[in-house]
Amino acid sequence: QVQLVESGGRLVQAGDSLRLSCAASGRTFSSHAMAWFRQAPGKEREFVAAISNWSGGITYYADSVKGRFTISRDNAKGMVYLQMNDLEAEDTAVYYCGARLYGTSTTARQYTYWGQGTQVTVSS
Image (cartoon, rainbow, N blue to C red):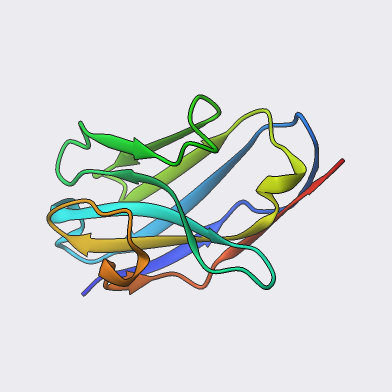
């Protein structure tokens, strides 16, 4: 069982940077692949970034955020981060942290655990 709590979302200007955090509880955190998804009003939840379990040596990014966003994890602290640079108005959404046992996936329905989300609003 893994419980997730996101934080760090807020209103920012286009071009700003923001770091989202996801605090995970549960002794099996390290064995879970983690990901960030986002959902804008009227749209489906979409993949943003994922990181492999254990050392987190493998990462994946959506084309729309590649080169601007960086996902990372700190297993000792039970944390996953999403560093977002050069934010654009199109990045406005509720950002969700997801966890699934073992391998990464870019598909939301394959993630077992979810947080409640944190709102990111980018003003142009």
